[in-house]
Length: 157
Image 1 (cartoon, helix red, strand yellow):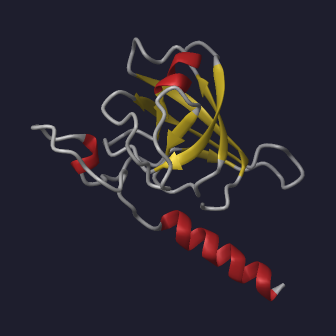
Image 2 (cartoon, rainbow, N blue to C red):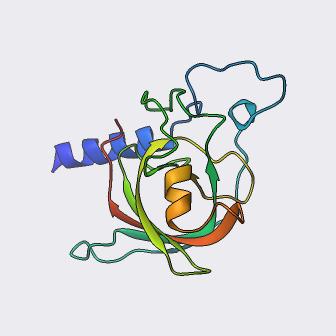
């Protein structure tokens, strides 16, 4: 029991630690999201399903996406960002967390894995890769109201 408490505390601490979106930054002449400091967002709606269910946590909020400016650069967990992969940036979820993201405007859904930190714009809950944004028709509008369903917590790596 003691080791479970220690592990849970470690996961919470790792998930809440701040880290930059990218390890190295390039000069682009203008301010980018990677140079911005995080800003708090409004508290999203929350619900938790029992431990026997497949959905561990459900949230609703606004999603956006990021692509070309970050393609090929390092993400916060050390991976190279592939804008065509099905990945996402979240401020606090442990790296490796698997989330089903449903666009509430059209009910299209995509499964993503958290490998980065963000978004850094107020009022946004998650930043999707371009590949994930295409799956739920988010590219044209740029942002959309979404439902996040955590299906598996990551190990933070």
